[in-house]
Length: 268
Ligand SMILES: O=C(O)CCC(=O)C(=O)O
Image (cartoon, rainbow, N blue to C red; front, side, top):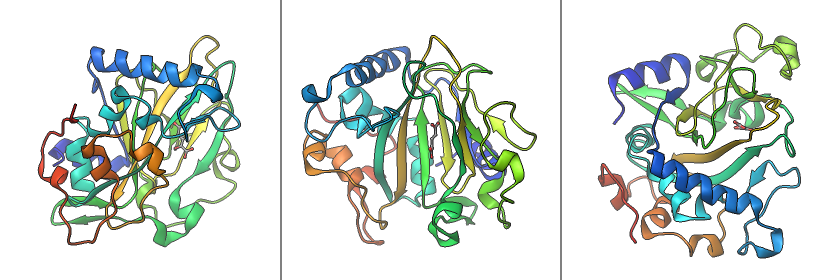
């Protein structure tokens, strides 16, 4: 489960910035695999892999290589996944996202699940001293982000806001330059992980670093009674039994074998 400090900070701010989560070896392997995916021409990729038109999203990045699949069960993040899903974890998707000076650099306006899909789309609540959240993301970072580079913006505390965000606030939600008071730019180092609910208002600054990329895996977790993510069979077939179990939707009363494990190692 989460530590006392994590629970306090996640509940107060609406995100956790976990430092040095990946070992140098894990980071090197994941970075090499991500580069192999990003550098491949479409015809050479296995079925159902590929880049979005703007080359920001690389579909099913978590399934491209074991070094990326491993990040789904990071030992520092797994207890958080188990607490937030009330011991019923499911992974809905795992896109690799890339901001690149020679590719995608555009801002993403502020948004969150509640604003996009309605108040009932994202639950966040406290039960018996634990946090329950039915839609959240873990972002393992493969590159350093420095202040001034751009990247992730969040409105701390907004995961619990009882009011709609006034549309005129924060430059109509499209922040391109200076970050206004009330919003913060999170600048993780390679190997760090950010965890946040989809109910937290967030966006992305334009990418300004001229010589560096920002490669981030976007791991979307939900309780397993929710709808299964859009992962095709061709992708599932590549994965270990542990990750396949994590992708499965199930009844509220079901208990997944992996959910009983404090540490999940992928079968060879
Ligand atoms: O690029 C990022 O860091 C976050 C993007 C994201 O979560 C979103 O677009 O909803």
